Length: 263
View: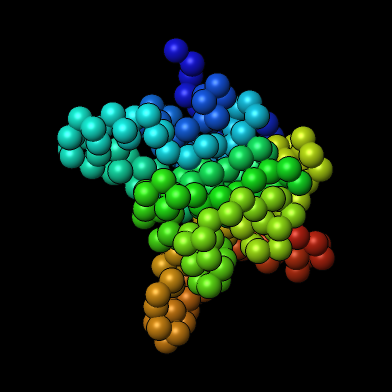
């Protein structure tokens, strides 16, 4: 049996490759659990500053493992269906709250839950011939988990159209809509994602990245007064962090920002 997720480290960047290429990397239980474990390990590793998600073969991910879902549904296995959904929820929760910078390198198709996996990342690099689509309702399925965070990336009216009137969005239009952040040349999304991860890791404090991501998550849904109050707490406490002290001192004394990969 193939290893569900391949792990490769390269200068502060950990690449996690979905590895079921013959089936276009569906989100099977095995793959979801392996990816969840790999993301936890990356979160705990001080050497890892950025995590890149990629897909083996021709596509990023075809989304849900429909064969497994059909088997559970026709077998009248509500416990199995709930367990499968909880595993996926845990994966998305971990990815959305991950302390490291996360980047999706999308080539080929990112469909349904696979599209959700990409757009749950901090940054998305797409190729011109890549395809993004939330096609769940076309097969009578509900895009339940992914819709909860799609509006973190695109405006509400855009999310509504993507979910209720599904169409396949090519790379350039995905960037225009906000589903993706950057268009790379065909065949280079992974290379560009690694380059982007290294560049950000070099110029940005890892503690500041983690704290900023946490605050972005915490302030969603807060009133502006609550958000400002929470931001003031973080502002004050983080000034005492060694990385903040280092950054300010370096700038004042050397008129430059630190190389955060130079430990």
